[in-house]
Image 1 (cartoon, one colour):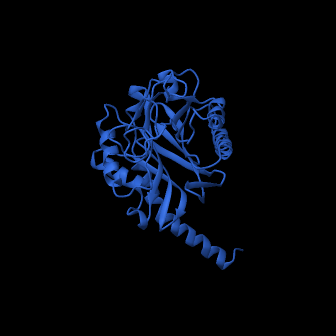
Image 2 (cartoon, rainbow, N blue to C red):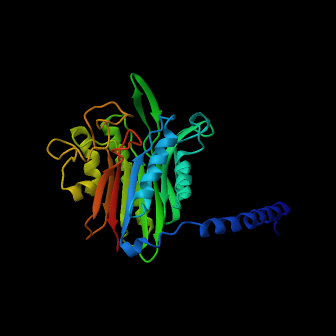
Image 3 (cartoon, helix red, strand yellow):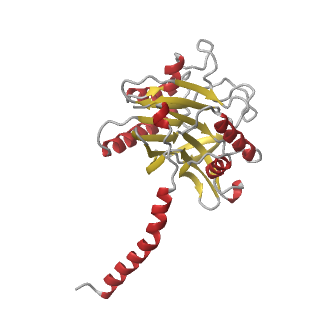
Length: 321
């Protein structure tokens, strides 16, 4: 016979479940649903680093991102965000939530998933987020190898980096896994390579969990400049895993940010950007796609003017079955 304590535990758990379940079901039913994607046959994916360190103009920068998304001839279905800031010291609860609310004010509804990477909860936090017009079925994340970075001269700060995945459902198409990450910036290139290996192991483990072959999208700020030989192994690991660099594939370029290829593909330290010192421009933000038999329809660098961050963004149109 069960003890009184065991019975009491069952009653308490049942009571909690009866309270929470209706709200869970209700939240599930309220999720946005991207029914128009199957009609046009492709998914529009945007990645942008929000620049956590600049606070005074953040609200205006988010307004410009929202205005851009609304002005597009087709909806931006997926938005991958890095350096999402929150906490009292930042002046906001969460900058990805701010962007979601700005889009709602403009008539666009997105589902939001966020994962903390660095900081002290309740004080100051930085993380990654995914905004999706499509219903999100599940979200998982992985902490990448811990490294010490040098964001300030001579000052080393230990920082965590995260990878996250949201599995979304596209009506009349199927399910697709979308990964978002931000690799270390002021670290040794070998440490970034180690983070990439763990990232790919995370992807493989997640994909093995789901039956069949599914298309995969991987985007974010990889801090990988193809003009630097020491950075190249990160890129080679990702493409060697079967991913296509969408911007390079569409535009037929190599590093896509040089005299030979032109500078339209550069996403960081671009001349004229008020949030970063003019320097040799780099391409460090990418959207990768893994699937067989599909040609990428279009891929562009966006937010080169008006500027919304020290990074430009990448917007790719990805064909789907």
